[in-house]
Image (cartoon, rainbow, N blue to C red; front, side, top):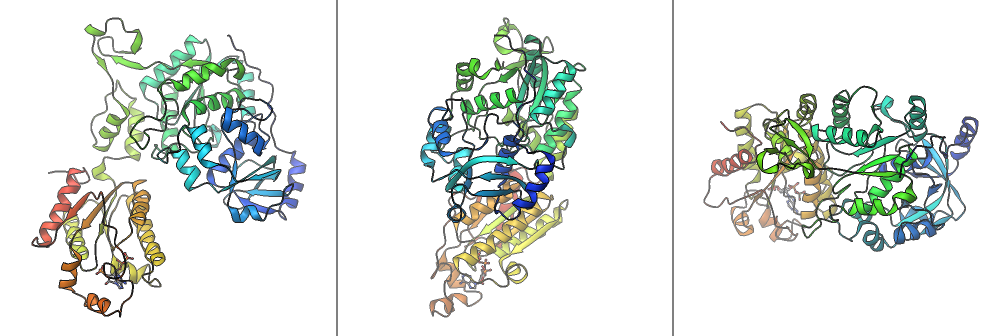
Length: 572
Ligand code: PPS
C-alpha cells in the first residue's frame, strides 16, 4: 500500500464569523454546561475536524456501536467513545431536542449542542469493552467511575470558537492548518510520531529512520491535552522537543502540538490516534511497543500485550487509509557509537549494547546522577533537570498522623528545628492547633469538618512542596481516605512522607496532657477521636514511630534518617 495524502480541507463544525457572533448572543440564554478539562479537549478536536467524521458528542446508538465493536451506527470505524458526561442533577433539567451552551472553565461559550439523546451508560461494560477490564488501576476506568458524571448527553455540535490557549500558540495547528502547511511545502507523504514523553536520541533515530524508510517527511505530533497522570508536564516537554527539532536535517521535519485527551487505551487508542492523524493530513503513523499503554493492572500485570496495538492497527489499516510504520526498539552499540534496531544487530555477542530504561532515567534525574550523551541531548537533560531537580533540592511534605496527645506536635517541632539547622529549604509547620487557629477557625470535629480541615492542610502543603519548601503537617487526620487524597495532592509535586505516631490510645489517655480525654469520657466533648470517633490506623505509612520509652529527639532522628534514605536530604 502506498499512500499519498488527500490534502483538501476537512469538514469543521464551526459556523461562519457572522453566525458565530449572532449565535454567541443567542446562546447566552441557553442552559449552560461547564465543560471539564477533558471535555474541552474533546470538543476542540470535534470542532476542528480532528475527530472527523463525528458531528458531536456521540448519541446512544453510536455509543453502543463504538463500545461493542468500534463502529458508529452507520458502520464507520471509530474506536473511542467521545461522550458528554454530566451529573444526574444537570441531566434532569434537559429535555430531548433542547439546545444547550457549552462553556469553558471561565464561562466563555465555545459551542452549542442540540441534545438528541440522554441515557445512563453501563460504565462497567464500557470499561470492559473499551479498556479491557473494569479495573480502577486503569487511568481511564478510574476516570469513568470516579470523575465522569453518571448520565451521557449526545447530539450535534455547532462550533462558535476554539478553546483559548495562551501557551505555545505558534506550535498549535488545526487539521486544516497542517493540511495547508503540507500542501504549501509539497509534502505528499508524512509520517507522524505520537508522543507523551520527552524525546531522547533513540526516539530521534527511530523517527528519522521511519521517515527515511517510508520516503516521507516527519511530523512530531506530541499530545499536550491530557496524558497519563505523573507524566512530565507539557511545558517542559515542548521545551525539550524544541531542543531536539534542530537535530533533524533541515526542512525534513516539523512539530505540531495536539490538544488530545489521551485515554491510555492501548490497541483501541492506537487506531484512534491513526484516524486523528489521518484527519491531520498524515499518511503514515509510527506504532511502537505497548502504544499508549496504561501500565500495570491491580494484579500487577500488563493490561495489554506489547504488540496488541500493532495487531489491531494492522487489521484496520486499509480501511483507515493510513499506513502503520511499526516501531523498532533502538539500542546503542558502543563499538560503532550509533543506534541500531535491536533485532537487526547480527554480531550481538561481540559488541556492547547500552540502554537506559525509563525507570532508570527517572532514578538518575531524581538522584542528580549522570545521564550520558549517548542517551540524550544535553539540552534535553538540562530542561528536565530544571523542572525536576534532584530530590534533595525538591520540596516535600512530612505528614504526621496519630491520636490527640500522641506526641505529633512535639516530634514535628523537633523535626522542624533539625531541618532548619541543616538549612537549604524553607520549612513550614502546619500543626493541628496552628491550622485550626489560622486556616480552619470556623470548623468543628464532624467528619465533614475534619475532612475539610485536612484537605486545606493538604492544599497548603502541596503548594509549599511545589514551590520547593518543606511542609510538616501534624493533624490527627483520622480518615484513611482523606489522607490518601492529600497524598495524591502532594505527590504531583514532590514526596509525601506519612509518619504514624503510633502511641496507643491507652497511653494517650493516661498522659492526658490537655485534660481532654477526661472531658471526652465524661461526654463533655463529643466525637473525640479514639473515644467516641474512629481512627483508621495507617496501613502503609513511610514510617511508624513508637513514643513509649523513646525520647522525642530519637523519634525526630528516625524521621531524619527516613528522609535521608529517600534521598530527600543530601547525605554528608
Ligand atoms: S482533625 O481530626 O485532624 O481535623 O483534628 P486536628 O485538626 O488535628 O485537631 C485536633 C486537636 O483538637 C483538639 N480537639 C479534638 N481532637 C479530637 N476530637 C475532638 N472531638 C476534639 N475536640 C478538640 C485536640 O486538642 C487535638 O489536638 P492534638 O494536638 O491532636 O492533641
